[in-house]
Structures are given as C-alpha cells and as structure tokens.
Image 1 (cartoon, rainbow, N blue to C red):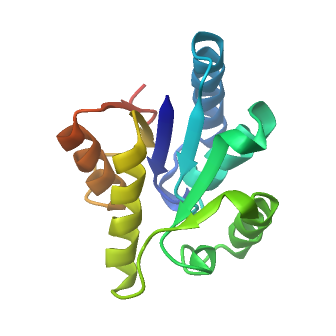
Image 2: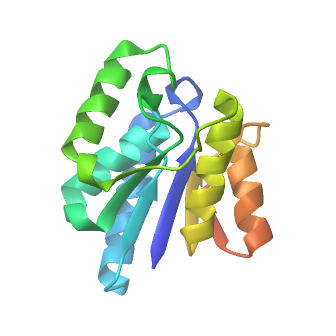
Amino acid sequence: MKIAFSGHRSDKIIDRDLLIEKLVTLLLNYRQEQKDLFFITGGSTGFDTIVLAELIKLFSKDQIEIMIPFSGFETYATKDWSEIKQAQGLNQTYVDRVKIVGGEKGSFASKCYKRNESMIKEADLLICYWNGSPSGTGNTVKLALKKGIDVINLFES
C-alpha cells in the first residue's frame, strides 16, 4: 500500500503534539495491519516535515520517498528558518529517495500542483491535515477524491 501525505504549513497547525499523537497511532496501526507499506511525502515544512520525522523513527529508509516540485523547494516553502533547516536536514538524510516531479517550466504554484498530482497518481491512500480552506492541500484532497482513493483527515479526527 502506498500512502501519500499532504498538509498545511506550521502556521495552520493548531495542536502539534496532538497531531503527532494521532499520526503515530495511525502509522502504528498500518504497520501492524499491512506488510508492504510505502510512503510519499511532499517535502514541505509543517505537516510534511512532521510526517517525515515520524516516518524516519518508525520505518526503514527504503519505504519513504520525498516528492518535491523543484530542487531547493524547502527554502521557498516557509519563512520559518528553523523549519527550513530541519527540512533540509531530513531531505539530506533521505537524498537518495528524493524525486523532483514539478517539471522544468511554470510557476511555483504550478510546479507544486504537478508534485501533488504525481503523489496522488501513485497513492492508494491520502493522509492529510486540512482545515477545509482553499489551499494546495485542499487541491490534493480533491485530486485524491477524484481518483477514488480514501482520505483520512487528521484535522477532523
């Protein structure tokens, strides 16, 4: 089973500790139930960074892939330099599993959309943190629903 993740940046995360608790519980349940798990994260700061940090603790390196829209994406994804440093460190740890999928041409938003499409194209399930607002995460949820895959929203659960 391939699980993709999409979520908001840190400024929209209400209770980080509760989010991590929900995420870890869900991941541990999937680890018990499924033998073949593969994870795809979007490489941004906020939810993606939280997910990647927990995946690193719970699963092997060959089960995790980071899809980014373009090289150096993490430096554009937020103004929170501590998160950029963390994202860069996590991405460097997993540099052999980083896939650049946003294409050569287009705006920041169009490259991010292509990345989100690529994640959903490969996914069997989407786990997200989405507050319902119009956003990249909202677009990713719509892509997943259009494809007919299940969506688990940790914002609501």
